[in-house]
Image (cartoon, rainbow, N blue to C red; front, side, top):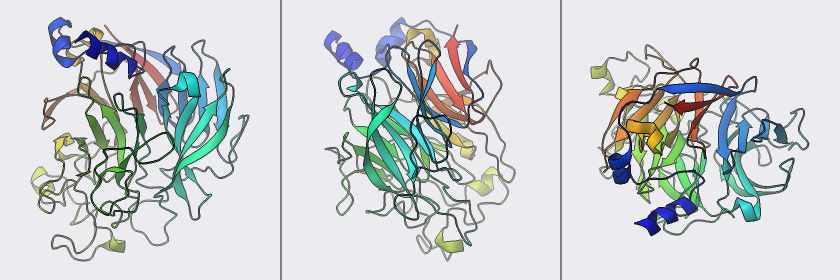
Length: 425
């Protein structure tokens, strides 16, 4: 058991790690009361964060670029997007449009020796645009990046539509990057780009979770179905913007935006199908606007629960009986679920080992809105969960990212450009 815990400590950037059973036996009980410290404000669309063990925080701003905040509080701009100001280096092909821009960021588990960091960004290098995963080398003084390597270049991007009835350019873009704490591989979430053919496609990299090595090659054990790109770990997704790993089992979970209904949290299995298939003429459907049935039948109608049950499901187990079933569906509401993390440490009391999910508070056609954080108590088998809504000690915002820092506290980033540190009492 001691060897197992030591192994887990070596495999994660978190400062503390306890197995769920051990946590239940040793942790104090009760609901933690949170206090908040504003770490940063006045930024622009802060999208994601990643930490070094000493608390150094890399962060992205969707329409500006990549920066790093040192433990002293000093912020160094690193890589700017096209037309960004105040960066030592800019990339003319990186751009921001709609939901697309520079989004996920992840630190290589061997950063101490290789200095690698990874970002997910929209690029114009391949017309009319693609999403890419960039690997960058960070200087020893954390003031610049170099040696850009685009290790994934073919992730779907939605160009500006001409007559598309849903969304704008960059819609349903995915974009979260996380390293698996046990396997050391990079997980990449991608969105369906409002394209009905993409989620179930074996060769298009939208609507997927990819699992790759640091060079962008397929990780062993992905178990992609025959004919699929070997980088595919799971497919049949709509717009997963969160991925996180359960302590003790290292089971990956996604947090995924729903179609006017059913934001979902799902335990992933290698080669699994998320069950999202918005193509016309599937399962008895007729034609749909622009070939995308993601809002049909009548998905934009009233939000009465009885009516929602008749909508095309996010996880279509009728068409795909073996689809990965969600642990939680947000009471069949769509409110812009965007990120997730599992809490670790006795300081979290009853929340130790539970998942936190963030919401951007999107409300459409009568759907109740909520800029909030929820804590999910997921059953060991990942089949169901109960929800507790966090009592926030700071103003609610469009919460975009949540990460547990090495000191055991929780950091949340908002579209309003604020990053908060939350500590339990």
